[in-house]
Image (cartoon, rainbow, N blue to C red; front, side, top):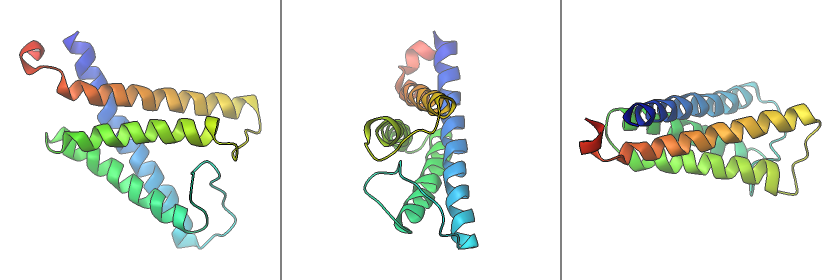
Length: 135
């Protein structure tokens, strides 16, 4: 059991770091290029350039959460980031009436990403696995 908990924790760190860098990278590229033909219908409650700044901030927060949790500091930030990532993926893609899939392959890819985010959330909770049982 402790090996599984350790693997899930490591997966949570890796997912948060890579997903955070991905979000920040996309937002940075769009902001630098000045493109105006992007659509982020899956991000709820925001439109226009505001969504880019929110994605940039969320991405940097996710990367920071992974680094801080790996260092043993601010562990709740990782739990919050992974939970919000999972919740916003499910809401933005599956629950919200705004976003539409263009094919089964796209829906399947987003379902796998949502499942990966759920796994990262469970892994982030493994940080609180009792220390006496980890030895």
